[in-house]
Image 1 (cartoon, protein in one colour):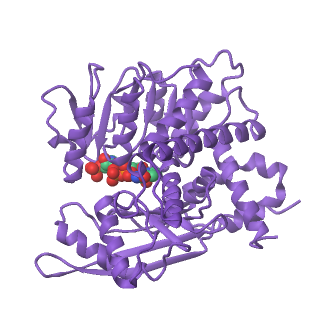
Image 2: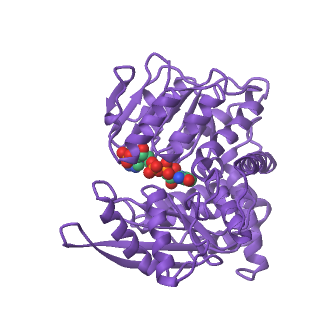
Image 3: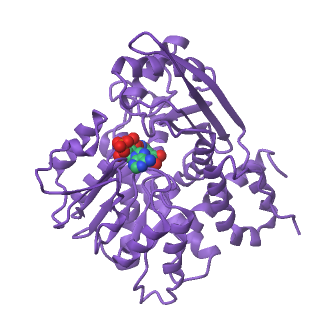
Length: 459
Ligand code: NDP
C-alpha cells in the first residue's frame, strides 16, 4: 500500500494555496482509492516546476520612482507550455498566484487542449493610475518577464487588472526588447494576432456549461431564469449578455464597493450592461453607472443574500466571494445552480453547503432542494480555451471567423461538462446527481498525472 501523500504547503503563510490543495486532495480521494499509485503524483504536482520573482521599478507621472513585486509561477508543463493569466491587483502575493497556477493546471487539462498551467502578476494597483503610468509599469514588468516567456515556453494572458490595454503595452514591450513579433501573450488586439471571441469567451463559456446543467437536471433552458451575478468586469459582463440572449434575466451586478440589484425583478438590459462596461473601462465604481432609480444600491454588500428567490447564481468577481452563510442564503432562496465564473469563487465551507444538498438526492426523479455546484476550473475554462485557440491561430498565422471560434468554444464547454459529469459518476457514488467538483478535479488530475508519468516526472 502506497504511503499517503504529504502536503508540503504551509497554511500559515500560503492560505489560498493550501485551500486549493486541500480541495483537490479531498475530492480526488475516491480516485486514489482505486489508483493508489497516483498518490505520489499528487505530492509532486503540488510543487511548481519554477517560481520567478522579480522587482519592477517604474516612473510615476511626477517623476518619482515606484517599486512593485512581479511574479510568474511556471507550475506544470506536462500537457503543454505554461499558460495562465497575469493579475495586477494589490492583493497579489505568492500564495494567491500559486493557488491560481495550481488550479490552472487542471483547468487547462479540462479544455482538452495542449496547455500546461501557470500564473503571474504583480501587486501593482492599476486603479487611479494614468494611462502613461500603466504603460510605464507594463514596460518595466515585461523587461524582466520577457526573459522567461516565449511562444513555445510560457504564454501569459489577462486576468483581474490586465485587460486589452495592458496586454497591448506588454506585447509592445516584448516586441521591442526581443525584436520578435510572436504569439507570446493571448488576449491580443483584433488586428495584431488576437482571436475573435476571446473577450467574450469566459462569460459565454460559463453560460454554455450551465446550459448543459440546466438540461440534465431539469430538462430546461435559460428562458425566464433569474440570475444573480457578482462582479461587473469582463466575465460578469459577457456572462450577463449571453444570459439575456438566451432569454434569462440578470438581477444583479457588484464590485468591490457594493451591489446593484433589480429588486422588482425587471433586470438589466443590454444597454445597461454597455453603460456598466463604460464605467468599468474608466476603472470607476459601479455607483457611477446612472441607473435613474431603477436599481437598488447596497453599499459594501455582496448580492447573494439580497433576494428572496432566484434560479441561478454566478460568482464572477474574485476568490472566496461566497461564504458558508451566503451559500445557505442561496439554498434558502431556491437557487438550483451555482457555477463559478471566478476562480475559487466559493469558500470550502460554501462548497460543503452546496454539496450537502446534492448528496441528499438519492432519486433522480426528485431533486427538490438541490443547489448543484460547478467549480471554476471547469465552468470558467472557456477563457483559457479560446486563448489556446488563439495560440493555434498564431502558429498557423491565420484568423478564424467569430462563428468558427464560438462553435469550437461551445464544443469544448460541452465536452468539459460531459467529462466532469461522467468522471464524477464513475468515482463518486454518493447521490443520484454527480459531483461536478469531484469530476472536474479527478479528470484534470488524472490527465496531468498520466502525462507526468509518461514524461518521467514520477515512477
Ligand atoms: P475584471 O478585473 O474585469 O473584473 C473583476 C470584477 O470583480 C470587478 O467588478 C471588481 O470590482 C470585482 N472585484 C475584484 N476584486 C474584488 C474583491 N476583493 N471584492 C469584491 N469585488 C471584487 O476581472 P475578470 O472579470 O477578468 O475576472 C473575474 C474573475 O474571473 C477572477 O476571479 C478571474 O481570475 C476569473 N477568470 C477570468 C478569466 C478571464 O478570461 N478574464 C478567465 C477565467 C477566470 P472593482 O471594479 O471594484 O475592482
